[in-house]
Image (cartoon, rainbow, N blue to C red; front, side, top):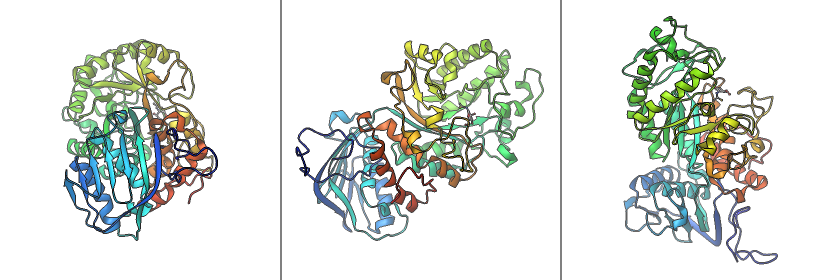
Length: 506
Ligand code: TNX
C-alpha cells in the first residue's frame, strides 16, 4: 500500500507480509487510495490510445511518442491499450478526480470530466519510468506497476502565481511553467500582470500602460508586455493543460507603472518616473478622482473579455499610501466594477478591511496565524485561498546561502513548505472556508526560467500536495520519498531544481 494513504479495509495482511506488493511511493501529490495488484504493465510498440476526450489523448501521445519512439495512434472512443473514459468513474472522484487501473495488458482511466482524465494521465506518467518525459528517443522498457488508484482533490483550487511585473517573462517562458505545474495537478495560474515596476498586458483603451508602463522592470532591463493575442495564447495553452488563468491588476497600491503612463490618473496631475527598484507601498491610484473608476472599468472590461475563467484578481495588498477610509471605499467600488463585467473578485487578504461581496475570495498571505478582519469576513461566508508567506512563498530563500530570493518571511526549505495544514492554519478559518492553496512566485530577484525552476522546485510540489491530498496522507518521511522520485524526472525535463538536503535524490 501507498505509505500514508488511506488503506481499504482488508488490503493488508495482519502482520508481516502484505497481501499484495507495495504500490511504489512515487506519485506527487499522494493519491487518496492506491492498491497494488502485483502485475506489471509494459507499454510496447503497438500501444494505442482511445480517449473520450480527444485533447487529453493527444496530450498523452505527445509525451509518449518522442520518448518511446512508438507511433501511439490516438482514436476517439473505441478500444486501446490505454483507454481514457468519461464513463464508469466512481461518483466519489467528482469533477476533478479519476480512477486509474493498470493491469498486465492495459491501462484504463475513468473520470466524470476531462479534467479528471488529465489528472489521471499525470499520475500514469509518474508511474512510468522518468525517461518517458524525454523529448528524444530513450531506452525502455516502459513499465508501470499494476493496481488501482482512486483519487480526487481535497481542495477545488490549487494555484501557482507568477509575477511577470517585477521581471517580464515571455509567452514561451510562461508556457514552460504551465507544463511544469500541471504535472502536480495545479489547476489555476495567477498572473501578477501589473506592479510599480511594469504593466504587462496591452489595454486598447489605455495604450501607454503597456508601451510605456511596460518598458522596464526591476534593475532597469527592457521589460515587455503581452499583446492581447499573446495573452490569449497563454490562456489557451493553460486550458490545454486544464489550468485556468487568473489575471491580476494590483490596485490601489503597486500602481506606479500605470501612474507613470498617464499623468491624468494622479491626484496632482503629475506623472511619476518609471520605477526599477524593489520598494513596496509608495504608490496609490487617486481614490477621489472619478477618472480612476473609468480607467478601472475599461481595463477590467478588456481583461474580462480575455478571461474565460471566473476570477479577476484586484490585488489590494500593501496599500500603505492609501488612507484606510479611501482603501475601503475603493475596494467596495472596484468589486462592483468586476461584478458588472461578470467576474468574481479575488484579492489579497487586505481586502477584508472593506465590505466584501458574498462571492469575493480573499487570498491570505500573512506570516501570522491570526487575522481578525479576515476571520470576521469568513464568519460572514468569505472563502479563502491560503498562501501563508512563511510556508507558501516560492521567492523566499531555502537557506541563507542561496543567492536568489528574499528572506522577509523567513527561510523555507522543503519541510517548512510542506509542514502546515491549510484547513486548520489561521484561527477562525476552518476547512469548509478554505477554497484551496496557492504558491506565489515573486520575481524581484528572478530573471530566467532557470531561476523560476530553482525557486519553484521542489517546493511547488509540496504546496500542490497540501492542496490535493487528503490530510490523512500527510507524512513528511513518505513525502520525501515521493519528492525524491521527481528528481530524475526534472533532470530529464531540464528543470533546474534546488537539491534540498532534506531529501534524498535518486
Ligand atoms: C510582498 S505579499 C508582496 C509583493 C512582494 C513580495 C516579495 C504581497 C501580497 N505583496 O509585492 O513582491 O512581498 O516577497
